[in-house]
Image (cartoon, rainbow, N blue to C red; front, side, top):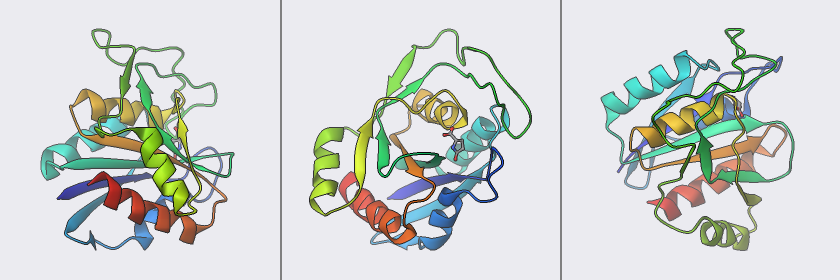
Length: 183
Ligand code: PCA
């Protein structure tokens, strides 16, 4: 299987983004699955374009998207992407959309297309001692924007938010297990 694995550059005054470190630490192949890695810009306008190009190039069987979140001790499996962009602080291009709808003709929210229960997936990862939880909102910032794009393009996709101070080895272990269970 071909997996498109995305991460983000640093944003909001951070000098690093844990998701960039995570994808650098992962190999190009896990079992029979090939990982196609892309680091996305933290830009409402440019990130979805780069994602779209990557999807057109790679035609992935699965799109696994990673983003950094500030707080929390658990990796969050995101159930929904919302059809809205909203940010007071702005993205790396200083774009500050206010309650802006992404695609006026499309639904207000789209749900992950993994085709299995998120709670069951979460429980199985927790059984391995991995720090995960199910989340119902990826926010309205750039992570949500690219998650909406992937789902809008009909991708089989899951967005995963990773708290910035989590132990890198734990995160890597979680991603290995997640990839095995998703594919
Ligand atoms: N996290 C931000 C955007 C980039 C990232 O890593 C978010 O949660 O929207």
